[in-house]
Structure formats: structure tokens, C-alpha cells
Image (tube, rainbow, N blue to C red):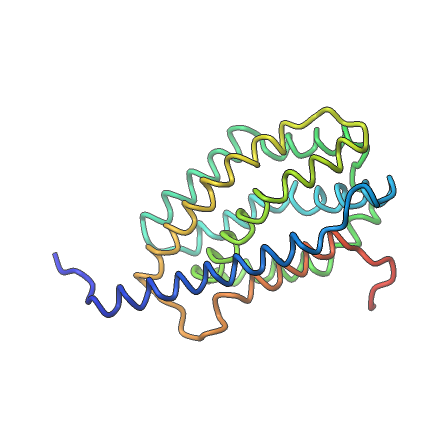
Length: 223
């Protein structure tokens, strides 16, 4: 069995380190932009939870399925399948729905419309089935969500909710999910490293725009 040349391994390691640094900065910027829950009105808190639910409940499994279809390495497939199996087996969309109901934040048509454009941009990006950029995007998302759970739970408590299974589970399991996605990324980059410097981060930027819309939605948006 032949091993990869040392220069290729070193190049991939350097690129993965750069990707992690970019994702860490993007995550920190998003977390720093979150408004103090104590300064939000009940309707603002409801809106954040509802828009988050409108996005996550029906799309996360689609995004992760796109990652599974796109990858070529068996290691990446196995790690993504573990994530999908957990999502379906433990009915994470059901957890999300119970969380929203208890916080009096079931998404309305207006909530769905508010995130529609940014959500469609992410869906179309996933639909291109480009393995490395999708894995980078999902690693970013899983890492952000794990850190976002404390904030989301605070919003829900201020809405009078005691239903915290969703935030409790994802505050823990997404640590492992993020690590596994980086391992999947390493395996996939060994097959097909990105060919352009900007390529790995397109989905991160699209998803960051969607998250910003969830947490700081402006009532008047460009048509």
C-alpha cells in the first residue's frame, strides 16, 4: 500500500488548520452579535426561536443527507451516517417541535417567509453536492449550534418554558458531531482538496447570513 506524499499530507493539514481558524472566527463573530436576552421583548424572543425552528426542523437532515451523497470516502460516509442515524433514531425534529411549542414559538407563515431567501440560498448550495465545501459548512454549523444552545435555552426559559431536551442534547452531542465532521473533512480532502482558496467557505458565508437573519431579523428587507 502506498502512502500519500509527505508534502500532500502537510498541505492538507495546513489547509484544515486554516479552515478551523476561519470557522472559529466566524463562530465567535456570530456569538458576539447576539443580543442580550434580557433586553429583548417577548415577541423578539419568540421570533428568534420560531425562525430557528422554521430552519432547523425541516432542513438539517436534508443538509446532512446532501453531505452524505456528496462525499467519496468511506470514512466520511460512515461518520455522516452516524450523525444521520442519531437524528432520525432520536427524532431530533420532534425535540425541536416540542421545544418551540413549550416556548410559545411555533413558526408562523411570516416566520417562514422571513428566512425563505437565505434558506433557499443554502439549499441550492447543498444541492451542488460539492463534498469539501459542504463538510466545511456543516462543521461550522454543528460547532456554532453547540455554543448557541445556552443562549437558545435562556430565550425559552424567559418565555416560560421548562422543555429543554433539545438544547440539553445538542449542547453535548454537537461537540462530538463537530469533531467527527472535521475527521470526515480530512478523509475527503485526501481524495479531492479544494482547488480555489475561497471555495471551502462559500457555504459558511451563506449559512452565516441565514443565522444572522434568524437572530437579528429586520422587518423590512429588500424585495
